[in-house]
Length: 364
Ligand code: CA
Image (tube, rainbow, N blue to C red; front, side, top):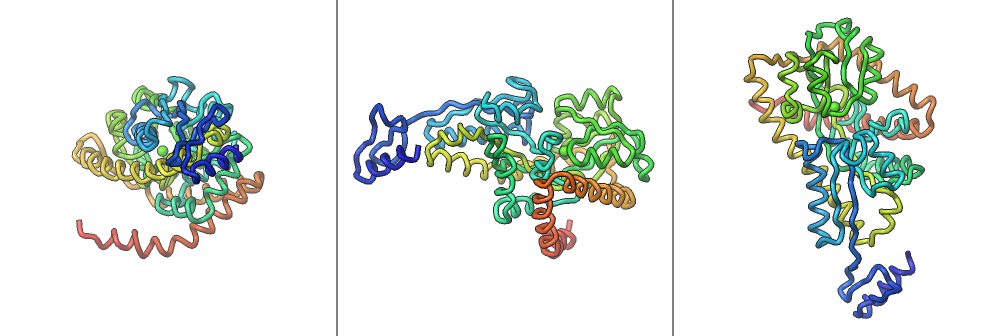
Protein backbone atom coordinates (compact mmCIF):
# COMPACT_ATOMS: atom_id res chain seq x y z
CA UNK A 1 0.00 0.00 0.00
CA UNK A 2 2.68 2.43 1.10
CA UNK A 3 4.67 1.79 -2.06
CA UNK A 4 1.67 2.69 -4.20
CA UNK A 5 1.25 5.98 -2.41
CA UNK A 6 4.94 6.62 -2.83
CA UNK A 7 4.83 5.91 -6.57
CA UNK A 8 1.69 8.04 -6.90
CA UNK A 9 3.34 10.83 -4.94
CA UNK A 10 6.34 10.85 -7.19
CA UNK A 11 4.18 10.93 -10.30
CA UNK A 12 2.13 13.79 -8.89
CA UNK A 13 5.28 15.66 -7.97
CA UNK A 14 6.47 15.21 -11.52
CA UNK A 15 3.14 16.60 -12.76
CA UNK A 16 2.11 13.45 -14.61
CA UNK A 17 -0.79 11.08 -14.18
CA UNK A 18 0.18 7.84 -12.46
CA UNK A 19 -2.78 5.86 -13.74
CA UNK A 20 -2.22 2.38 -15.03
CA UNK A 21 -3.65 -1.08 -14.45
CA UNK A 22 -0.95 -1.71 -11.84
CA UNK A 23 -2.00 1.31 -9.76
CA UNK A 24 -5.54 0.78 -8.55
CA UNK A 25 -5.36 4.05 -6.61
CA UNK A 26 -5.20 5.96 -9.85
CA UNK A 27 -3.75 9.35 -9.08
CA UNK A 28 -4.34 12.25 -11.43
CA UNK A 29 -1.89 15.03 -12.21
CA UNK A 30 -3.40 17.27 -9.51
CA UNK A 31 -2.76 14.70 -6.80
CA UNK A 32 -6.32 13.41 -6.30
CA UNK A 33 -7.22 9.73 -6.48
CA UNK A 34 -9.80 8.48 -8.95
CA UNK A 35 -10.80 5.23 -7.24
CA UNK A 36 -14.36 5.19 -5.96
CA UNK A 37 -15.77 3.37 -2.93
CA UNK A 38 -19.27 2.21 -2.10
CA UNK A 39 -19.82 1.48 1.59
CA UNK A 40 -22.69 0.56 3.85
CA UNK A 41 -23.29 2.10 7.27
CA UNK A 42 -25.52 0.34 9.82
CA UNK A 43 -26.92 2.23 12.80
CA UNK A 44 -28.74 1.64 16.08
CA UNK A 45 -31.33 4.33 15.31
CA UNK A 46 -34.72 4.43 13.65
CA UNK A 47 -34.14 5.68 10.06
CA UNK A 48 -33.73 9.48 9.89
CA UNK A 49 -34.63 9.80 13.57
CA UNK A 50 -34.20 13.43 14.77
CA UNK A 51 -30.71 14.07 16.09
CA UNK A 52 -29.17 10.60 16.21
CA UNK A 53 -30.41 9.29 12.86
CA UNK A 54 -30.35 12.54 10.89
CA UNK A 55 -26.71 12.98 11.93
CA UNK A 56 -25.71 9.82 10.09
CA UNK A 57 -27.31 11.01 6.86
CA UNK A 58 -25.64 14.40 7.40
CA UNK A 59 -22.34 12.58 7.80
CA UNK A 60 -22.63 10.47 4.65
CA UNK A 61 -23.99 13.40 2.58
CA UNK A 62 -20.98 15.53 3.62
CA UNK A 63 -18.54 12.73 2.82
CA UNK A 64 -20.12 12.18 -0.62
CA UNK A 65 -20.06 15.92 -1.41
CA UNK A 66 -16.53 16.56 -0.11
CA UNK A 67 -15.18 13.56 -2.00
CA UNK A 68 -17.04 14.49 -5.21
CA UNK A 69 -18.85 11.15 -5.02
CA UNK A 70 -15.74 9.02 -4.62
CA UNK A 71 -16.96 7.67 -1.26
CA UNK A 72 -20.65 6.89 -1.27
CA UNK A 73 -22.15 5.39 1.87
CA UNK A 74 -25.64 3.89 2.11
CA UNK A 75 -27.23 4.25 5.53
CA UNK A 76 -29.38 1.56 7.18
CA UNK A 77 -31.59 2.18 10.22
CA UNK A 78 -31.54 -0.21 13.18
CA UNK A 79 -32.93 -3.59 12.10
CA UNK A 80 -32.89 -2.81 8.38
CA UNK A 81 -29.71 -4.75 7.65
CA UNK A 82 -28.59 -5.91 11.11
CA UNK A 83 -30.37 -5.63 14.50
CA UNK A 84 -29.95 -2.28 16.29
CA UNK A 85 -27.55 -3.70 18.88
CA UNK A 86 -25.36 -5.69 16.43
CA UNK A 87 -23.68 -2.73 14.77
CA UNK A 88 -20.36 -3.35 16.56
CA UNK A 89 -20.18 -7.00 15.47
CA UNK A 90 -21.25 -6.31 11.88
CA UNK A 91 -18.51 -3.69 11.39
CA UNK A 92 -15.94 -5.74 13.31
CA UNK A 93 -16.57 -8.77 11.07
CA UNK A 94 -16.48 -6.63 7.94
CA UNK A 95 -20.09 -7.43 6.98
CA UNK A 96 -20.33 -3.66 6.47
CA UNK A 97 -17.64 -0.99 6.44
CA UNK A 98 -19.15 1.56 8.82
CA UNK A 99 -21.49 1.84 11.79
CA UNK A 100 -22.99 4.56 13.97
CA UNK A 101 -24.14 3.82 17.50
CA UNK A 102 -23.23 4.46 21.16
CA UNK A 103 -20.22 2.70 22.68
CA UNK A 104 -22.06 1.94 25.94
CA UNK A 105 -24.21 -0.54 24.03
CA UNK A 106 -21.09 -2.78 24.04
CA UNK A 107 -21.33 -3.32 27.80
CA UNK A 108 -20.67 -7.01 28.45
CA UNK A 109 -18.49 -7.31 25.36
CA UNK A 110 -16.06 -4.47 26.02
CA UNK A 111 -17.11 -2.82 29.28
CA UNK A 112 -14.49 -0.05 29.17
CA UNK A 113 -16.12 1.29 25.98
CA UNK A 114 -18.76 2.91 28.18
CA UNK A 115 -16.33 5.71 29.05
CA UNK A 116 -16.57 6.98 25.48
CA UNK A 117 -20.36 7.52 25.52
CA UNK A 118 -21.01 8.79 29.01
CA UNK A 119 -20.36 7.94 32.64
CA UNK A 120 -22.97 8.90 35.24
CA UNK A 121 -21.94 12.12 37.01
CA UNK A 122 -18.99 12.31 34.56
CA UNK A 123 -17.79 14.67 31.84
CA UNK A 124 -20.23 16.98 30.06
CA UNK A 125 -20.11 17.30 26.26
CA UNK A 126 -17.53 20.11 26.29
CA UNK A 127 -15.28 18.17 28.62
CA UNK A 128 -15.75 14.85 26.80
CA UNK A 129 -14.57 16.45 23.56
CA UNK A 130 -11.69 18.14 25.40
CA UNK A 131 -10.59 14.80 26.82
CA UNK A 132 -11.06 12.87 23.56
CA UNK A 133 -9.40 15.31 21.16
CA UNK A 134 -6.76 16.89 23.39
CA UNK A 135 -6.48 14.82 26.57
CA UNK A 136 -5.51 11.40 25.19
CA UNK A 137 -9.05 9.92 25.28
CA UNK A 138 -9.24 9.14 21.57
CA UNK A 139 -5.89 7.29 21.63
CA UNK A 140 -7.19 5.11 24.47
CA UNK A 141 -10.39 4.46 22.51
CA UNK A 142 -8.43 3.41 19.39
CA UNK A 143 -6.29 1.10 21.52
CA UNK A 144 -9.39 -0.47 23.09
CA UNK A 145 -11.05 -1.18 19.72
CA UNK A 146 -7.93 -2.35 17.82
CA UNK A 147 -8.40 -6.05 18.78
CA UNK A 148 -11.89 -5.84 17.26
CA UNK A 149 -10.53 -4.60 13.93
CA UNK A 150 -12.34 -1.29 14.43
CA UNK A 151 -11.30 2.36 14.17
CA UNK A 152 -13.59 4.62 16.26
CA UNK A 153 -14.35 8.31 15.73
CA UNK A 154 -16.33 10.62 18.03
CA UNK A 155 -19.38 11.48 15.92
CA UNK A 156 -22.11 13.44 17.65
CA UNK A 157 -23.14 14.35 21.16
CA UNK A 158 -26.61 14.83 22.67
CA UNK A 159 -25.46 17.14 25.47
CA UNK A 160 -26.75 16.58 29.00
CA UNK A 161 -29.79 14.34 28.89
CA UNK A 162 -32.92 14.19 31.04
CA UNK A 163 -33.31 11.84 34.00
CA UNK A 164 -36.34 10.33 32.35
CA UNK A 165 -40.08 9.70 32.42
CA UNK A 166 -41.70 8.09 35.44
CA UNK A 167 -45.29 7.05 36.02
CA UNK A 168 -44.94 7.82 39.76
CA UNK A 169 -43.25 10.51 41.84
CA UNK A 170 -39.71 9.94 43.09
CA UNK A 171 -39.59 11.60 46.52
CA UNK A 172 -36.95 9.40 48.10
CA UNK A 173 -34.53 6.65 47.14
CA UNK A 174 -37.03 4.03 48.29
CA UNK A 175 -39.37 5.10 45.46
CA UNK A 176 -36.86 3.63 42.99
CA UNK A 177 -37.25 0.16 44.48
CA UNK A 178 -39.18 -2.27 42.34
CA UNK A 179 -39.34 0.05 39.34
CA UNK A 180 -38.68 -1.43 35.91
CA UNK A 181 -36.89 1.17 33.83
CA UNK A 182 -35.33 1.29 30.40
CA UNK A 183 -31.86 2.60 31.17
CA UNK A 184 -28.67 1.32 29.50
CA UNK A 185 -24.98 1.35 30.41
CA UNK A 186 -23.55 2.04 33.86
CA UNK A 187 -26.67 4.09 34.65
CA UNK A 188 -28.65 0.85 34.37
CA UNK A 189 -26.34 -0.93 36.80
CA UNK A 190 -26.61 2.00 39.24
CA UNK A 191 -30.40 1.78 39.01
CA UNK A 192 -30.26 -1.98 39.69
CA UNK A 193 -28.20 -1.44 42.84
CA UNK A 194 -30.68 1.22 43.94
CA UNK A 195 -33.33 -1.51 43.92
CA UNK A 196 -34.79 -1.11 40.43
CA UNK A 197 -34.79 -3.42 37.43
CA UNK A 198 -33.00 -1.93 34.42
CA UNK A 199 -33.88 -3.09 30.92
CA UNK A 200 -32.26 -2.24 27.62
CA UNK A 201 -34.26 -1.95 24.42
CA UNK A 202 -33.86 -0.05 21.16
CA UNK A 203 -35.48 3.38 21.05
CA UNK A 204 -38.20 2.19 18.71
CA UNK A 205 -39.71 -0.07 21.43
CA UNK A 206 -39.78 2.44 24.28
CA UNK A 207 -43.12 4.20 23.75
CA UNK A 208 -45.20 1.02 23.56
CA UNK A 209 -43.40 -0.52 26.54
CA UNK A 210 -44.08 2.56 28.67
CA UNK A 211 -47.65 2.99 27.51
CA UNK A 212 -48.60 -0.66 28.12
CA UNK A 213 -46.93 -0.68 31.54
CA UNK A 214 -44.29 -3.24 30.50
CA UNK A 215 -41.87 -0.70 32.03
CA UNK A 216 -42.60 1.90 34.74
CA UNK A 217 -40.04 4.43 33.62
CA UNK A 218 -37.60 5.23 30.87
CA UNK A 219 -34.79 7.54 30.09
CA UNK A 220 -34.17 8.19 26.41
CA UNK A 221 -32.41 11.45 25.51
CA UNK A 222 -34.01 14.83 26.21
CA UNK A 223 -37.05 16.94 25.27
CA UNK A 224 -36.32 17.01 21.51
CA UNK A 225 -36.10 13.22 21.09
CA UNK A 226 -38.53 12.29 23.86
CA UNK A 227 -41.34 14.38 22.38
CA UNK A 228 -40.74 12.86 18.95
CA UNK A 229 -41.32 9.42 20.50
CA UNK A 230 -44.44 10.71 22.28
CA UNK A 231 -43.11 9.73 25.71
CA UNK A 232 -44.98 12.68 27.27
CA UNK A 233 -48.19 10.86 26.36
CA UNK A 234 -47.11 7.71 28.20
CA UNK A 235 -45.90 9.07 31.58
CA UNK A 236 -46.57 12.16 33.68
CA UNK A 237 -43.36 12.95 35.61
CA UNK A 238 -40.31 14.18 33.72
CA UNK A 239 -37.23 14.23 35.95
CA UNK A 240 -33.96 16.11 35.67
CA UNK A 241 -30.98 16.30 35.67
CA UNK A 242 -29.76 13.48 33.45
CA UNK A 243 -27.28 12.17 36.03
CA UNK A 244 -26.85 8.99 33.99
CA UNK A 245 -25.71 10.73 30.78
CA UNK A 246 -24.22 14.18 31.29
CA UNK A 247 -22.98 14.44 27.69
CA UNK A 248 -23.52 11.33 25.62
CA UNK A 249 -21.02 11.00 22.79
CA UNK A 250 -21.92 8.89 19.76
CA UNK A 251 -19.44 6.89 17.74
CA UNK A 252 -18.73 6.23 14.09
CA UNK A 253 -16.89 2.93 13.83
CA UNK A 254 -15.04 1.85 10.71
CA UNK A 255 -13.72 -1.61 9.87
CA UNK A 256 -9.95 -1.33 10.05
CA UNK A 257 -9.35 -2.99 6.65
CA UNK A 258 -11.92 -0.73 4.98
CA UNK A 259 -10.25 2.29 6.63
CA UNK A 260 -6.81 1.18 5.40
CA UNK A 261 -8.17 0.83 1.86
CA UNK A 262 -9.00 4.56 1.67
CA UNK A 263 -6.44 6.97 0.18
CA UNK A 264 -5.28 9.67 2.62
CA UNK A 265 -7.53 12.42 1.26
CA UNK A 266 -10.68 10.31 1.77
CA UNK A 267 -9.48 9.36 5.26
CA UNK A 268 -9.13 13.07 6.02
CA UNK A 269 -12.62 13.75 4.63
CA UNK A 270 -14.15 11.02 6.83
CA UNK A 271 -12.31 12.15 9.97
CA UNK A 272 -13.17 15.82 9.41
CA UNK A 273 -16.81 15.03 8.63
CA UNK A 274 -17.15 13.00 11.85
CA UNK A 275 -15.80 15.94 13.84
CA UNK A 276 -18.19 18.29 12.04
CA UNK A 277 -21.11 16.05 12.99
CA UNK A 278 -20.13 16.27 16.65
CA UNK A 279 -20.63 20.04 16.44
CA UNK A 280 -23.68 19.82 14.22
CA UNK A 281 -25.56 17.31 16.36
CA UNK A 282 -24.98 19.42 19.47
CA UNK A 283 -26.39 22.44 17.62
CA UNK A 284 -29.46 20.46 16.53
CA UNK A 285 -30.10 19.26 20.10
CA UNK A 286 -29.54 22.70 21.61
CA UNK A 287 -32.17 24.16 19.29
CA UNK A 288 -34.57 21.20 19.33
CA UNK A 289 -34.47 20.77 23.13
CA UNK A 290 -35.28 24.45 23.68
CA UNK A 291 -38.44 24.27 21.57
CA UNK A 292 -39.56 20.87 22.84
CA UNK A 293 -39.07 21.80 26.51
CA UNK A 294 -41.36 24.81 26.05
CA UNK A 295 -43.99 22.48 24.63
CA UNK A 296 -43.67 20.21 27.68
CA UNK A 297 -43.84 23.12 30.12
CA UNK A 298 -47.08 24.21 28.46
CA UNK A 299 -48.53 20.67 28.58
CA UNK A 300 -50.93 20.28 31.58
CA UNK A 301 -50.34 16.51 31.58
CA UNK A 302 -46.62 16.82 32.20
CA UNK A 303 -44.89 17.68 35.48
CA UNK A 304 -41.26 18.69 35.35
CA UNK A 305 -39.44 17.60 38.50
CA UNK A 306 -35.92 17.72 39.88
CA UNK A 307 -34.62 14.55 41.52
CA UNK A 308 -34.27 15.04 45.30
CA UNK A 309 -30.65 15.61 46.38
CA UNK A 310 -30.69 12.46 48.56
CA UNK A 311 -31.59 10.37 45.50
CA UNK A 312 -28.80 11.94 43.44
CA UNK A 313 -26.32 11.39 46.30
CA UNK A 314 -27.17 7.70 46.46
CA UNK A 315 -26.90 7.28 42.66
CA UNK A 316 -23.54 9.06 42.73
CA UNK A 317 -22.05 6.82 45.40
CA UNK A 318 -23.31 3.71 43.58
CA UNK A 319 -21.66 4.98 40.38
CA UNK A 320 -18.31 5.26 42.14
CA UNK A 321 -18.68 1.73 43.49
CA UNK A 322 -19.38 0.36 39.99
CA UNK A 323 -16.56 2.13 38.12
CA UNK A 324 -14.10 1.05 40.83
CA UNK A 325 -15.24 -2.57 40.52
CA UNK A 326 -14.95 -2.36 36.72
CA UNK A 327 -11.37 -1.13 37.02
CA UNK A 328 -10.45 -3.78 39.60
CA UNK A 329 -11.30 -6.60 37.20
CA UNK A 330 -10.33 -5.02 33.85
CA UNK A 331 -6.90 -3.41 33.28
CA UNK A 332 -8.18 -1.65 30.13
CA UNK A 333 -10.99 -0.04 32.14
CA UNK A 334 -8.51 0.91 34.89
CA UNK A 335 -6.26 2.72 32.41
CA UNK A 336 -9.18 4.60 30.84
CA UNK A 337 -10.78 5.40 34.21
CA UNK A 338 -7.52 6.94 35.44
CA UNK A 339 -7.23 9.22 32.43
CA UNK A 340 -10.96 10.11 32.44
CA UNK A 341 -11.17 11.04 36.11
CA UNK A 342 -7.82 12.84 36.10
CA UNK A 343 -9.26 15.15 33.46
CA UNK A 344 -12.61 15.48 35.24
CA UNK A 345 -10.81 16.60 38.39
CA UNK A 346 -8.75 19.17 36.50
CA UNK A 347 -11.73 20.43 34.51
CA UNK A 348 -14.30 20.89 37.29
CA UNK A 349 -12.92 24.16 38.77
CA UNK A 350 -12.87 25.70 35.31
CA UNK A 351 -16.44 24.58 34.47
CA UNK A 352 -17.66 25.97 37.82
CA UNK A 353 -16.35 29.46 37.15
CA UNK A 354 -17.22 29.49 33.44
CA UNK A 355 -20.34 27.61 32.18
CA UNK A 356 -21.97 27.13 35.58
CA UNK A 357 -21.24 30.61 36.97
CA UNK A 358 -22.29 32.28 33.77
CA UNK A 359 -25.64 30.47 33.50
CA UNK A 360 -26.40 31.28 37.14
CA UNK A 361 -25.92 34.97 36.45
CA UNK A 362 -27.76 35.18 33.14
CA UNK A 363 -31.11 36.86 33.42
CA UNK A 364 -34.07 34.85 32.13
CA1 CA B 1 -30.08 8.12 27.27
